Length: 283
Image 1: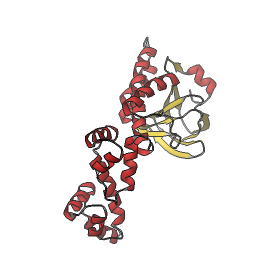
Image 2: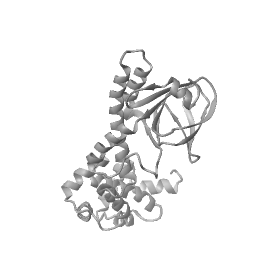
Image 3: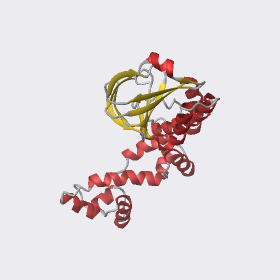
Image 4: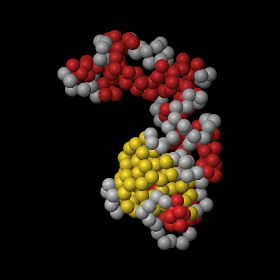
């Protein structure tokens, strides 16, 4: 199949209880426009790459090392300049709703992870769902009996991992209604203020141990490490116009040697060396 056409998709696609699987093969240059219709789609590349523009806003190239999740009713302009094979998974709302409810309970969030209007296109390296994608692809293209049953097993695992990741991503980068999202916002706004992790936990009505446990569950880092990373990234900006001592004090580090060590651990260079590289045009 070498066209993104709804009729041909329905004729040639494989349908299970949870998903529709569409396979496309483009032997040479191809340009077209297609839609995601009423369901979410996971779009993957088996070989080659695509230049796509979604809803006339977001334009990018992705290849076999990445995938994208398209929300319903998206319009996609596509251009292919090299032989490309692609697999598209159209996931049922029922499966997304069932798994989303479990994710919301686990992460203590109150909205569906797929309904993030500020970032409707989810793009990611496919390493964390590569096994599931490989199994779905191999099974869908095989002639084995009962392959629909096997595909549904694989797609449940894939969707769980996918929505789990999207839920974490939503909290970290956008959802300030969640306590951890609020904490990250406080950290970003308080890097130059006299506040510590215990103070952040207290402002959220949480004990420091409980806060630390939940924070690491969402971000993969301890609150101290996450806050330190924010401060070190800010330090690079401040060092352009201030001395090492001034920046150290501005970020709440009375022990300048401690600040220098943290900066060096983060960037592999001391603050003073960083400033010299800036002056010499090396950065």
